[in-house]
Image 1 (tube, rainbow, N blue to C red):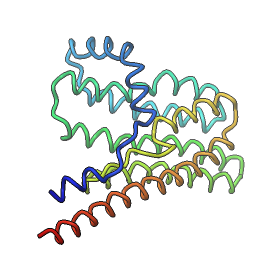
Image 2 (image 1 turned 90 degrees about the vertical axis):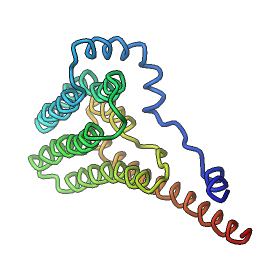
Image 3 (image 1 turned 180 degrees about the vertical axis):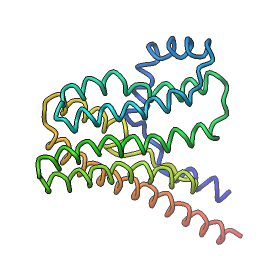
Image 4 (image 1 turned 180 degrees about the horizontal axis):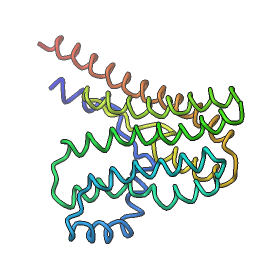
Length: 220
């Protein structure tokens, strides 16, 4: 009974941009997924390709070709939406090695990508923007880690203003506008604010659990 009360007291998990885009893009993604499934293309192949494409993004950014990087990201980043859909289409169980590979390579991909910014500003001898780039990449990784850790403890934390899709949309737009410095400052601020949002969201759920346990003890 206490567990039921705790679940009712927990904040509901709001949909982030990723969930909304997945619904809108279904009409485009489904035919591609059906084609890949017909030829038994492994979802892990898409996961690895998605990570490898980040070397291209990083190279373009490192060489100051920001608009080219934005176009490449716009065309190639959607691969990230295909591997999970393909895995479900092929009847793979939720979790397992595929989920581990996807989560791990997503983090590695972001490290590679932001390495391009750090290298670019190293060539420019701009120590301040190198530090901002460092904050942006660590914030991005921590946002993802916070969700993963929360879910491993039984809490939901898919909240916040800067989930992965939001970060990539912002990157594509501001890189196309040739505004890498503004982009990195916004990412550094938004990611750490999102980390706070997720921490607070989990804290509220933990408080609800503690209260439910106390109420259950009193009933007993």
